[in-house]
Image 1 (spheres, rainbow, N blue to C red):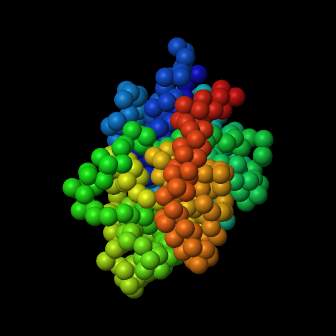
Image 2 (tube, helix red, strand yellow):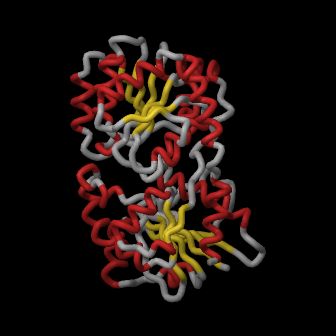
Image 3 (cartoon, helix red, strand yellow):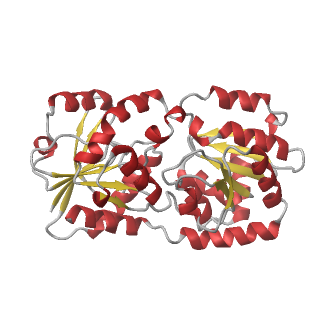
Length: 370
């Protein structure tokens, strides 16, 4: 079997889909048989960054901006994937968009349907193009891969996809986290970022869907009672005005630290030294930072919506994302009780161990072979 694989998301500063693609590739290649091979195809201004992939991949890069190429594919139905990288039996479109093929079967990854379920919380640059095409791709593809049962339900309900061809392939944690000692992490963070004292951690792109103003407002009230700081790790997304306003108007804004994008090494340190990870998102197709925090032994407070309870199981403390008062009470309770935090950390490690990239790769390869 020859597999074509969309490597466009493998950028140098990878976020959710990029991490999904690189971890899946890293695990799936060793599973291939003697008669199998995999070829990468990418589009975009810059070629994929294969650093850290630890494998050699036959690939072709088309140096055309992705949105331009998507318009060409959508209008002309050309050039086909088969024409660009040769005959393939299966092509895996890893980032929502399903390009044209001559003969290959097509697999498309649709991690979530946030742009359809909560369009008001998503960038118009995504909502418009995605709403017009992703539903059609979900119906046309031979197999749709998604990352939770909650997302599968949304894809079936929102797009009319055949439930039988939508498969759930749970991802694993994005970084290696379970080897970081808390004391070592604290010392390293103090040296690099000037951390002093305990902190509450949030990790993700800073955008409306993540409910960061609600988190900031809750923390501002918690900060009256406890000595913690709030650390926000993640690059800026769209419509960050309300986030900046919330931070600037907070009475304890001097105890809110924005780190921007952080590398995997520093991310592991941040999880390892945090007192609690708080993720009050309005909607998640999976919620990878929750899994990462649990893997690192960091207690988790998160929302009771979408896929988050499916991922965190009985390990997390849950709140309504719209209820700031409940978030304040939960943060104070967890941060004030070291015994409860230790128990949550233990449950989190057990829960996180159920999700591995090897399992994801095996399920994905089974989808290709089907």
